[in-house]
Image (cartoon, rainbow, N blue to C red):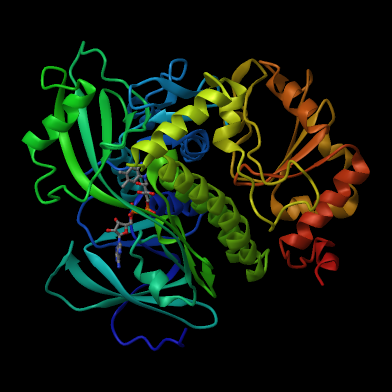
Length: 547
Ligand SMILES: Cc1cc2nc3c(=O)[nH]c(=O)nc-3n(C[C@H](O)[C@H](O)[C@H](O)COP(=O)(O)OP(=O)(O)OC[C@H]3O[C@@H](n4cnc5c(N)ncnc54)[C@H](O)[C@@H]3O)c2cc1C
């Protein structure tokens, strides 16, 4: 990256963070940073939030993220919480169910593992929240062209545009201490960074049809992947009153007309979806790919969301992975900007998140390869294989939750050798002083948290560990009769599974590590300070740790 020499008018020269792209990931990151008191300027080429549906499944961690932003109440009407009934299946060509996974119970975050939603509703809500936030400037009608960085900041040059068309006016530059490219699959920011892209080679073009289910219509709720040599398909509920049907396109298809109404109704008839049951909302053609950027940081320039990784949507994890990126980034950037941590803290952003997302891209590609099969003999063999393995696989409840959240972060800021580190910390219902609610609501989220089971973690801290904890603004809670009562016994079960009495949770809900006694606890906190690259403060002894 070259040193920058601003040549045109600079907007927001005192902005902490400049974000390119106001998709769901850029807007979530903007809000997470602004909630920490950071100033953010977001630049987007289009005049309004993207109106067409894409993501349809929201994970429990994403719901928890929006809970932490205080957006849950506004979001709830848009989420389909029919979790007792939601399950997804793999079907043989004759519709025999080969395998089923139920999304029952709650995921680790205290919400169903996966809920249906309509992405434009959520994107619109995030856009309104950004517009309303005093620390976020959302600037529509600007397209990033170049990004350059110096030692302390980075500068984006933006052209005036109206979506994909130029508009009159001069380019502007926006300067921030950090620039984050949340500019989607064809990221300009990524192309200007010093990073390669690894491509799995998976590429498949699909027709995506969204329908509005008429009140009282029945049989329009299939959720699963259809093995079918004539035309592979996946069907899924896509938010309240909506059903999605995705079908692979074939070489013989005329892609200019396959999305025409006549053609779409013909294709839907295969699933007995007819005009008396649904209205067509839209259809669009997408090419699904599996790839990732090899590094998500180049100095003060970072990537998040589809700019950093793309995956076929078969596991419904693209948007959710992007939200995880924004969570992982917000607290790190904040700690660096506050002067508490060195910029090296960002090294772990790529190593943790890339390891996590690679597992998901590879699993999505594997499911894609299973589904995108048009060889009748290969499908017959697959069906026979499934029948031989088990007539019917049914993972329910807790197991379903595990399949949705058992991807572990890679090495970074995590207690080495701790098997629980890098997994999502549990959030469950607690009661304190007559108030019952989810733990994050009662304790406040976004901070480092020590949770003790029947022990007060703060009481066991040494002077050195206490001073680190104060520097981080961390807090401690006890799950037990005298503090936060474990309403459903969920924490008792979790701590038993962990084999620990104390858990250290990071601001992005990830378990940093666990401890069984005060010696372990103090070692864990001191180790955390080292991995955070904490600076010495006059009031703390944490600086002794940095070396
Ligand atoms: C059919 C389909 C189904 C899907 N289903 C799921 C699902 O069930 N669950 C799930 O988690 N994910 C799903 N996804 C994936 C999900 O939609 C994406 O991962 C998610 O939208 C990515 O968000 P983002 O903010 O990173 O990028 P985007 O939403 O692509 O936003 C990027 C933004 O940057 C802007 N931009 C780009 N370049 C510039 C520039 N140079 N200057 C200024 N602005 C720029 C763009 O206009 C855009 O607004 C699905 C995707 C598809 C296509």
